[in-house]
Image (cartoon, rainbow, N blue to C red; front, side):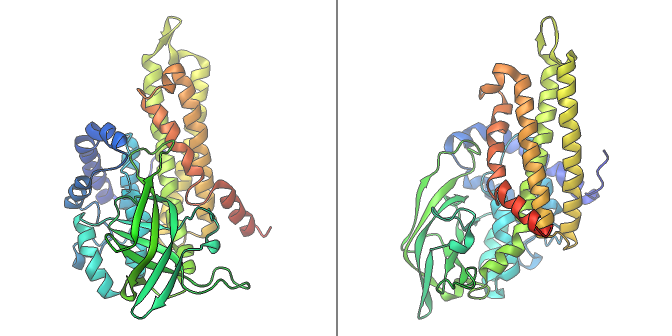
Length: 383
């Protein structure tokens, strides 16, 4: 189906991103996966092309885009190129929006120019070893002491955490209240090199090998009160307002990955011969890919509608949950069926379909699991 969600400027940007990825990422992506992270030089090069400053205000060196669509283009093109960009997606789509929305002018003047230049990356630290998706149970604490907060606790599953210059840490700044477990959470911006801040092991994951995911530890880190983001105790509300965008960006990537798997498999079955004829000539192959194509088309319509709604400030938490639930579950089905058509070759790392399969598994977990999405949707139905 013809897509109408992107305008001419965004499609021109797509061409720039596609050429950049083909030239500077695809040839070295295997090295990134083996290293378990994206080199800092990539962020600086991306910064030179304006890719790290899409929505940063022009006065701080950014592009000042009011739309999220450029971010979506980047996510789609990475999947089209069969690569991932490490912590860049989390930096741009998940962490940076908090600085744009809640940082003071003084904070923005400190942090946004190096972000725009690609010299500074961000990450957000929510998950803890014992909390999972239950953010109200966060136990990392920050007590006020003069003009600082003393931060103590541990975080895990932090994407981009191994390299981030700034980490947005969700911490409890007042005791948990029985009547409102969500109250008392704040966001503190921890800077690289602060005494007591350390990074643990980089987790050895099933997929997303080029995206560093790590443990973070805070041993009485003195964080200046000037690094409090927004109002004290208001973090849970901030998180709820940003979660639809986080879930939308996961949906965009999942949809694009499913489309990439179909394209990759269609090319393979045309060339692969079995029993003296192309694999694509068998009815089963045709029916499998036809079904995948129909599911992906439905996902694309849902994603595009959500992108438009988000740009108009109308994407609700429930609708974001719907689009994430559908696209991530669809991605899993499509990639699995595509891998099956590769036979034994699909189980080897020589073929990109195996990476698409491994990378797909986490999309039904992070940003809120499929079960959490169903819970949100059921509440929207009044159940």
